[in-house]
Every structure is written in structure tokens, then in C-alpha cells.
Length: 319
Ligand code: F6P
Image 1 (cartoon, rainbow, N blue to C red):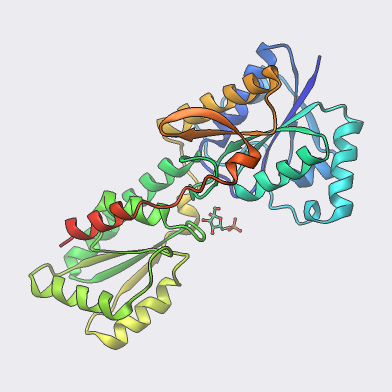
Image 2 (image 1 turned 120 degrees about the horizontal axis):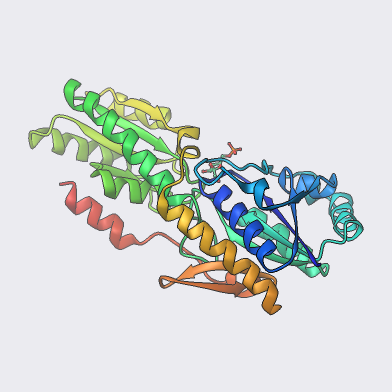
């Protein structure tokens, strides 16, 4: 039987386990030998290959994180590391590799594809910031986790009539901040995609206060600035003393929501189907609501940027 390996790479995201399970079980169903790789590309270099059977992925679908562990591999970026990775895949007779991860992980899969290894990428990152797809596994769970946290933070903020800054993840993208901000009705949303005008932020806080709303939630994307730095400036310029919560890894963990496990299951299945059809070196992707597979060279041309209309709407709704 042909051997297909699967790994997770980059930041973990809820739903990765469901994707691993889908790839392994669908692959076994079609008669492939399935191999799990530990710790992303580091594991490829180190030859950390484990045979997987149907039981290897039992009882994992409800958990966040990834049973295969993950890494942001520095070694894989070096030419020695890269060559060793290819040698290991050949040594272990691995025919195809399914990579579950974000942009960096896809860049790795593209390099391997250029060197003749058949790869497939399943998009998974809480940031939803990948090229080639409108959706990445983990995003919806992360946004709901933020929503849950903000609803708690709001109780205290409202009771004490304070300003709260909630700093969320997303790297250089504002997807998490925008969708969470829209969902929780944040008074102010600060995104890396928009210029930061701190005077306007202060003015808006004051207007909100004057209108009789005595507390405000500021949803801040980490790509803009640190919450504590923004708080300091607001503190200096106004009478408010913003309270900062950095949600951090809270957003990455926890039980995946149905949306993410369903998406992960479908994409895992699609990755194996694509390998069977010989349509490899592709990203499983959602475009215009449809699950498709996109060749890497097309995927990199498709940018998934935030919808400014959503940002404007959130601003209107929070007045
Ligand atoms: O890509 C997911 C993410 O959580 C980003 O939102 C964040 O900027 C980054 O990973 C943090 O990386 P690390 O895993 O090194 O903490």
C-alpha cells in the first residue's frame, strides 16, 4: 500500500485533532498505510514517524490542541534541514504528506512539492489569515472563546463603569478582533488593517460616556499595539483608566465547536480524495462557501482580507 503521512505544524488550533482523525480514517478506508509525524517539520527531519491505525485517533475529536504535537520549525528553514526532511520521507517510503497548519506550514509544503514530494495542506489557524481560503479551522472556536470571555469581562466593566481593553490574537490580521467585536458589540474595534487614531478613540470614549453609557469595551487586535501601551495613552489623555485583559492562549485551546470539527472532517476527507485523484500540491479551501481544492500557485494569489463593511457596520451598531 502507498504510505501517506500527516503532521500538524505552526500554532495549534481547535479542530486539528478532528482533521488528523479524518485524514487517518479516510486514508485507511481507501487502503493506504497511514503515518503520523510528531512535532511538525521537526519530526520529519528527525524521522519521528509512527504508524497510525483507526484506534490511534480514537477519543481525540473533542479535544483542542493536537495529538501529533506541533512546532514552528527553524531547522526546516535551513537547507541542511530541508534536505534531511526529504531524505527521511524517501527513506521511509512516504508517498504523500498531508500538512495541517497555517501560512508558514503551507510555505513548507510548497517547498517540498517543488522537490517532488506530493503534499496537501489543510488550513488550520485561529487567525483565519491564510491565503487561498476564506476559512481556517479553529477560527470559529477562537471567536466564540473571545465572546465568552468578553461577556464575563463586561459584567465587571459595567458594574464598575470602566473602560476595558481586550487584546486578542490574530498576528498581522484583524479577523478575530473584527468578528469578536461584531459579535459582542464592542464600542471600539482596533484593527491592524485600519490606521490607529488614538485621538479619535479618546473622543469616541468620551462621547459614549456623555451619551450615558458609562462603560466601554475596546476590542484590540494584537497586530495594532500592546493593550498596556494603548491603555497608558488613554489614561494620559482622558479621565478613564482602562483595564487591560490579554486573552492569550485562552483563545487557542478548548473544545472545538461543531463548525470546526465538521470543517476539519470534510477537509481531511477532501485531502485524501484529492490524493486518490492525483490532484496533489493543493490546499483544501473554502471559497464562496464551497469546499474546493486549490493548487498552491493559485492559492497564494487569493487573499482573504477583512471585510471593511463589517468594520463600518460594527461602528454604526456601537453608537
Ligand atoms: O497563529 C496563531 C497565533 O496564536 C497568533 O495569533 C499569534 O500571533 C501567534 O500564534 C503566537 O505564537 P506562539 O505560538 O509562538 O505563542
